[in-house]
Length: 121
Image (cartoon, rainbow, N blue to C red):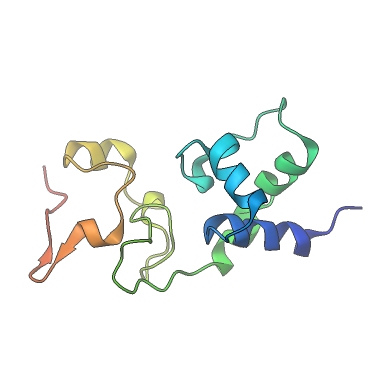
């Protein structure tokens, strides 16, 4: 029987970029600069990786980011606002239509005057 708490710990290590060789390997060879929350769970992956990906939806609600200066918080995929993660409400099409990228950080969305660009089209 696999341990959900251990898998959740691994997810926490991945999304916080914990400084370990395993996390570095995951970011280099599994994620390839893609967002962890948006990765496909493919059958050809290892058993452990498939299990980690399979519990993402059940633990995502418990992970909240402290924004700080916003340079390490993903604008669309991390839970940093009262609305939860914004990719649940704003589609990729709407993001691209506003000339924003999917890999933006919260710091890229705001300046001293508020939003850098609105999502109206």
